[in-house]
Image (cartoon, rainbow, N blue to C red; front, side, top):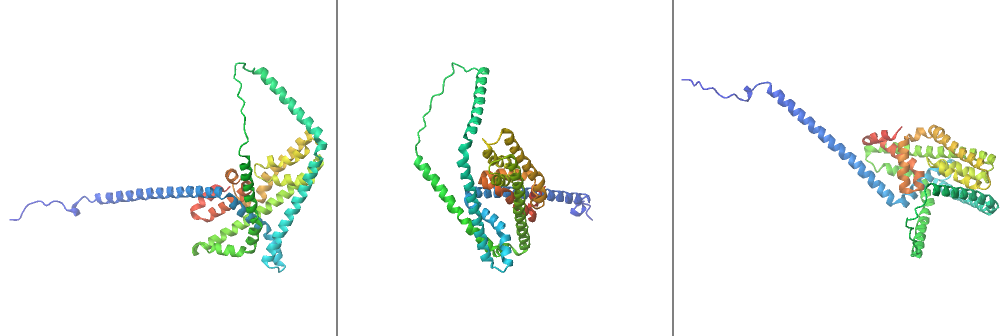
Amino acid sequence: MASNRILPPGPEQLMPEEAPDSQLAEKELEQRNRRKLNTVLHAGAVAQIIVGATVILAVCYIAKLVLVTLLFSILLAFMLEPVVNLLEKIRLPRAAGAFLAVLFMLALMYAGSYFLYGKAMSFVHELPKYSDRIRSHLAHFRQQTTELEKTTKQVFPEDKNAKKPMPVQVENEGTQGMVSEKLGAVTEVVLTLCFIPFLTYFMLSWQEHARTKSVQLFRPEYRSTAYVTLGHISAMMKSFIAGNFLIGLFMGVCSVVIFGFLGVPYFYFIGFISGFLSLMPYLGIAVAVLPPIAAGIGVMSDTQLLLVAITVLGLHMLAMNVLYPKILGKRLQLNPLVVTISLLIWGFIWGAMGLILAVPIMGAVKIVCDHVVSLRAIGDWMGE
C-alpha cells in the first residue's frame, strides 16, 4: 500500500512573496549600514581637519619668530622678483640679479630710515616751540576732568564710614634679571631678522629649482594640480603686493596734498606714512590717524585736527570699499567674515606681523582648498 503521509513543505514550497520581502529588507539594512559608515567617515574627516588645524596653529605660535621671518622673506622675494626679471632681460645671471636686487632693497631701507630718523629728530628739536600750546591743551583737559570729578562727588557723595584702602608698597626686585631677559629676547630677534636678506636672496636665485622640486614631492597623478596651485598662489601674491602698493601710493599722495593744505607739519612724509598705514584692514583708521594728529597737536586748531581725522577716515573707507574690491577682489576672493577671523587669529598669534600676513596667508589657503577635492567645501565657504 502506498503511504498516505503528508510530507512537510520544503523551501521551494514556501510562499513565493516572502523571498522578495527578505531581499528588500537586506537592501535596506545594507543602505543603513552604508549611511552609518559614511557618517562615521565624514565625522572622522572633520575631526582630522580640526585636529590638523589646531596642530598647525600651535606650531605657528611656538615657532613664531622663525615662521614670520620665513614668510616675510617670501613676501620680499615676490616684491623683488620683477627687478630680477628685468635684470635677466639684459642678460645678467639670475644670481647676480638677485644680489643686486637685495642690495638695492637694503640701500633703499637705509635711505628711508635715515630720512625718517632725520625728520623725526628735527621734529623733536622743534617740539619745545609748541610746548606752550600743548600745556594749554593739557590744562584745558585737566580742568574739564576736575569739574567732572566735582560733579560726580556732588551726585554721589562719598561715604564717610567707608574704609580707606591700605597703601601698598611695591619693591623693585629682580630688575637686573628682567633687563637681561629683555636684552636676550631683543638679541634673538635681531639675529633672526639678519637672516631675511639671505633668505630673500636664495629664494630669488633658486626660485625655479625650489618650485620644480616642490612639485616633485607629490605623487605623479597630483603633480599637475600642485603645479597649477603654486602658479595661482604666485599670481595672487604678485597681485596682492602690486595692488597694495598702488593703493598705498594713491592714498599717500592724497594725504600729502590734503595734509599740506591743512598745515600738518612735515606733511610730505607723514602723508605717505599715514596712507600706507591705512592699508591695514579694519585697524588702519586707528593706526593711520596717529602720525598726523601727533604732529599737529599744539600747532593746529581743533577744527584742523578734526578735518585730518575725517580725511583719514574718508580715504580708508574709499580704499576698503572701492579700491580694494576693484583691484584685489578678483584675486583674493575672500569674504569679509574670513578676513576678520584671520586678522583676529593671526594677530593674536604673530602680533603686528600677523595683521600684515593674515590676508595673503588666507588667500593661499583658499587656493589650496579650491584645488583639493576633499577641501572644496571649505574653499567655497571662504569665498564670496
